[in-house]
Length: 193
Image (cartoon, rainbow, N blue to C red; front, top):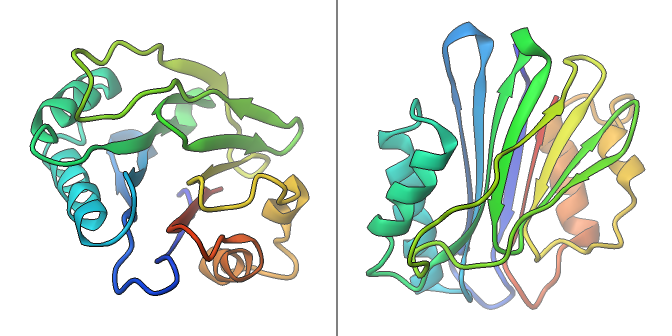
């Protein structure tokens, strides 16, 4: 079974974070992973992110493209979000990914692979027509990492692979948030391995 760790930190001076994370185990050992960054920070960003996750929760068994379309419609009354959405399929040794906005997605393991998120704001788009990337992903050999823009892009990719020092992913993510999260923005991170 895939192991998942998540961590979220609010911007300095805020009571809540506009970054949120969720994941759902599906049939055949598949996993749907979602990282959401509500635009801005504070209560309005928090509400937008939570509304997005609630929508994904309701339809998490649907195809990624459909989930994005429904979220785009459901979020029209909010300030909108950036989103990274991935379906990991261990039986097929593959990962399907689509990102809208400034979410960074990376696969580390045998090879470093950065997955592209396309610009935009979910909830503000006329239509969400983004390519779904399909890439190899091997359980036990690869890790999948999602980060919001509140995490420094200078964080070394080797930090994701610190299994001997941090066998628990949440402990590793907590440490990475302490070292690499901006105090001027909400920050979030998810690791799947």
